[in-house]
Length: 626
Image 1 (cartoon, one colour):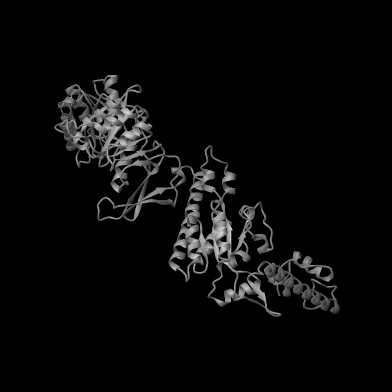
Image 2: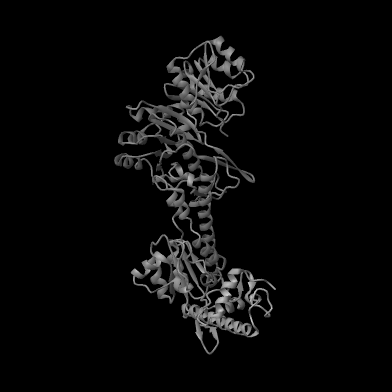
């Protein structure tokens, strides 16, 4: 026989008083049946003073209290569920004409009155919680509070409201399983047919300007909401679950129809599970940030939201779509994903790739700069002084490679005004002086009203984007077959490096500036990458070649005679020097070469530069881009 604990002894002793009332479950106590806690004979060592008459009296009073508790509990539960059950005789049975019930619990209360009116017109009884119930009542709706349903008050500062069988039983019960319906009848629980819930504003709380305390962040983690959403989504065959106010009209329209649209139910269930998954992803990301020492997490979830379907992918036979990353780390980080499009055709898959490359490059420069990109490679870059107009920068960027610039993406890191917009609209190709330059996209952080108006007149198809500067410190993700590669973003700039002179020839300050400019451009060119630059403008670049010599040849070919006296930057070290890239650069008249260094033949490169009187600086940082 199981032994009762001292706490049970105290409770059981209360039964000996006719005025006592039992408020705990009559079926189990401390994990053992209460009947096992009642002494079976007067010689029990736990109750040595009990006589046979005492034992009989105790048992009778226990049975009376058990019956009283059962009647009290059932009366309260049946009162709360009076609309869904009917007393037909001495036995209570579930009515075949169930009153439809909808549970509404919202943090985002947009259009709640519209929803409530629609549900009431369709014969639904409204059940609600806290602030949502108050909002509904203020709008004139009759509401059953969850406390009335559960016969239990909200507690722990609102942490416990809906976590109760009277709520979850009504949601999870399968209508086509008789034992489930019998259980609802037995416990006086009404079924719930529609669940409309959204969650505590955790995301906006932890990303608010100025941040929030850890304790406040924790308090904004919803518990009851996700539980109800998941329960309703699991039982979607019988319960419609809505987490997005945008779905209210579709919900009401579906409820008006004859018959049932099971595909609609499944879609709402998918959306509900995805909503909770994204919410939990943000919570997990936030906790990891507060718990780790900047390690990569052992598992990672990234909430992606469809921003737009695309006409096709890289090629017309490939389907494509664009998703926005809603990770906490991306909040306020700028970039093309959050850009505003003012004009032109819808963005394509390749437009996003090229636009991202152009914007990331131009945001690296502190002086007013124009960057032109083709197939994700900058083919033209030029900067001007802080007090100089961008007209010159734009013209010089085009002249770096006008053939490649045609049909490219043009990006500026300062406002586009009327004069610059007019120049973009009318500028003729330096190749023939006649062909008006054509572009896919223009990107800038801001436009004047007149400048935007003029740009719109260039072409109906020209995409005009306004984007916020890309911030440093982001993660970089890239997919491979069966997995993802994660790394820190490449945020180093010339200011972070020491351009260490390793040759006899010491470059002038002007040449160092040219080398730094060339190096910053080179960082954004596909490997193997070579950039030739002078006076804050790109003269030529070679990209994506399997060997560095070929990239050098392409860059020098584009730079032409202007390579003489210019700076050259390489994204990685030169494995060979004599009769190779280094010597070819020296012979072309380059005056300074910037490279990471680190080759076992670095001394050959230094000796070669010394022979030709060319300066060489080591950055000691590589910038591969694949």
